[in-house]
Length: 414
Image 1 (cartoon, one colour):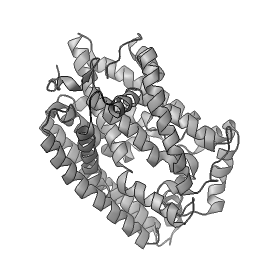
Image 2 (cartoon, one colour):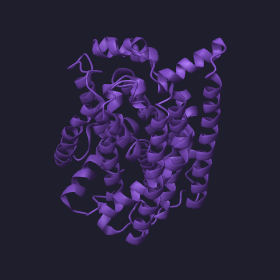
Image 3 (cartoon, one colour):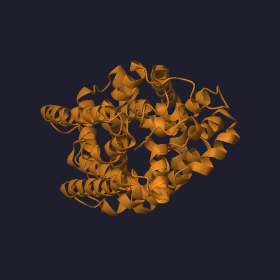
Image 4 (tube, rainbow, N blue to C red):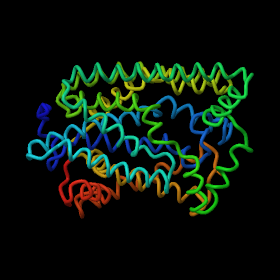
C-alpha cells in the first residue's frame, strides 16, 4: 500500500479531478509548442543552434534567445514532473479500488510505449511518449518512498545526469582536434546535432520532409534515435523530474495546499535563479559564435542543475495564478485533461503545415515567422478541448489509452 498524499482544498477538486494538475498540464502542453516549433519547421540542428537554419536576422536570434531563456527544458521538466505525480495518483486510486495498481501501471506504460512508437515512426521524430513509458516502468520502483527521500533521489538523478553529460562534453572537446578518424566522426556527429553542418548535410532531411509521407516516414525510420539509448542518455533527467513530481504531490505542493505566500517565495526564488542562468548560458553561446562546443556544453551540462529549479518556479507561479471557475483556468484545465490528445493532434497539424504530404513548408520559413502560428494553435486547443469534454467527457486518445490498458471506457480521473 502506498501512502496517500494530503487532501487538497475543495476548490481545487473538479469532478473528481485535481484542477491544479489539469491546469499545470494545460500550460505545459501549450508552452511546449514554443519549444517544439523549430523541430516541426526546421532541420534538426536548428533546434539547438539558430545558425544551423532559420536565418540570422535580429528577429530570428531574438526568437531563439527568448525560448532559451524562458521555455526550453523547463516545460519538458513540467511534463515529466506531472507524469510522476499522475502516476502516483493512479496507483493510489487503484489501491483504493482493490485493484493491482502496479499491474495497471505497467499495462498503461505498455500501451503508451506502443502509441509513442507509432507517433515517433509515422508522425514526428520528436516524440517523448515512448521515452516516458520506459522511464515510467523504472519509476514504479520508487513510488513507496517518502517525499523527502524522493527529493534526495531526484537530486541524485540530476548529479548522475551531469556526470554523464560531463563525460560526453569531454569527448566532444577531445574530438575537436580531429586528429584521428574516430575524432573526426565524433566531431561531425556533434556538428549534425548541435552545430552548423551546412546545406549539403541537411539536404537529405529537407528533401524527405518536403516529399511524400512515405519519404518522410522512410527518413524517420532510418534516422530515429533508439528509445533504449534515450533512456540511458536522458533517462536520469526525466526520472529526476518524475521523482520531484511524486514528492511535490505527496507534500501537497502540486495540489495547492501550501500558503500562497510560500508559493510566491518559491516562484520568486526559483525563477530568479533559473531565468538569469539560462539567459547567461544563451549569452555564452552567442559570444562563442554558436560554436558547437558551447552549444553542447550549455544544453547537455550547464543547464542541468537549474532546469528543475526553473520547473518548480514555473509550477509555483502557475498555481498562484489559478482562479477556480475562471474563464482561463477552466479552459486551460480542459486542455490539460486532453493533453495526450492535444500533443498528438499538434504534431499532426504542424507536420501537415510543414511536411510534403500537406503544405510542404519545411525549411521555408525563417525562425521568427514560425511562431506566428502558435496563437492560432493555442486558440484551437482552448476552444476545442472544452467543447469536446462537454460532449464526451474525455479526450479520444485518453479514452483509447484507458480502454487498451483497463479493458473499459469511461471515467475522467487522472
